[in-house]
Image (cartoon, rainbow, N blue to C red):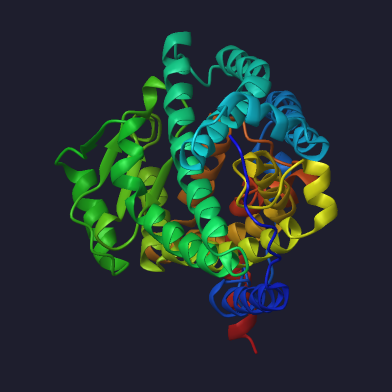
Length: 429
C-alpha cells in the first residue's frame, strides 16, 4: 500500500466557512424544531424515589447499574484510548501499510477498516462478556453464548460495511479533489445519513430479529384506533422476537416515509397488561406523529457536514499528519487517524445529542398522555419498564448528561402531575 499523492493543501477558508454555516444551521434547526420545554408552561418535578420503588428495588437497580457502567465505560474509553494511541504515534499507519501490502487504495481502505473494527471489538470483548454474565445473573437475558456471538458477528459485519463505505468515499474524493474534498465528502455524508436511516428498518433490523404482524384481537384494534387518534397512518404493528435475546421490554419506531414501522418487543406483550402496552405504543406513535426519526436524521445529516469540515481542517495540519505518519486524507493509512478523530468527536458531541434525545422523548411521553388520558397507568408503566431493565432511578448527573438518551424513570413518572400542575396554573391566571 503506497501513497505517492502530491502534497496539496486544503482550501482552508471555504472549509472553515462550511463548518461555521453548518454549525449555525444545526443550531437554528435545533432551536426551532426540538421541543426544549419538557412541560410547556411549567416545569418537571420528578417523583421521589421512595414513592415509586422499594429500598430493595433501588438497591438491586443501583448494583446492576454500577457494574454495567464500570464495564461499559472501561470498554469505551479503553477502546478510544487504544485507537488514539495507534493514530497519534504513527504505529497504526505503519501496521496498516504492512497489512495491506501493495493493494490498490480502494482495497486497502476496507482492509484497514476491517482491522480497526476487529481490533476495537477485541479490546471490548472481555467487558462485553462480563456484561453478558451480569445480565445472565440479573435475569435480563437467557441467550446462549453461541447466540450472543452470532449477534456480535452480525453487528461487526454491519459496522465494517458501513465504515468501509464511508471511508472509501472520503478517501476517494480526497484523492480526486485534495483542495475541495470536504465539500464532496460533506455532501456524501449528508445523503448517506438520510439514506441509511431510510433503509435501516428493511436492511439491518431483519438481521437481528424476526418481525411478525401483531395478531388480530382487541389490543391490535385498540392500537390502530390510537394511531387514528394521533393522526398517524399505520397499516400494522410489528412484533419482534426480542425474547430470544433479552427479558427487557421495549418498543420503538424506525425509518421514515415508506419504511417507517412501529415495533414492539414480544416481551412487552407478555409482561405488561394491555393498558400499559397501549400507553407504550402511544409513545411510539407520538414519535411517528412528529416525525422524530426524520428530525433526528436531519440533525445528524447537517451535523455530519460540520463534522466532515472539522475533520478536513484537522487532517490539513502538517504536524498532525507527521505525528500520524500519513501524507493526507487520501492516504489509505489515514484510516486509523480518521476513525480515532471521529470517535473522539462522537464522545464530545454525546451530551448535546442526548440532550436533544431527552427532549424528544419527553414530547413523545406527552403525546402518549394526550392520546390515552391514562396518567396513573403511565406512571405504573414507567415503574415496570424500569424494573424490567434494572434502570438506575437516580443515575449520576454526569452519566445522565453524557449517556442518558431518555429522561430518568423518576422524571418520566413525574410528568403527568407536572403537566396537570402547569394546566392548573395556566387556567388560574
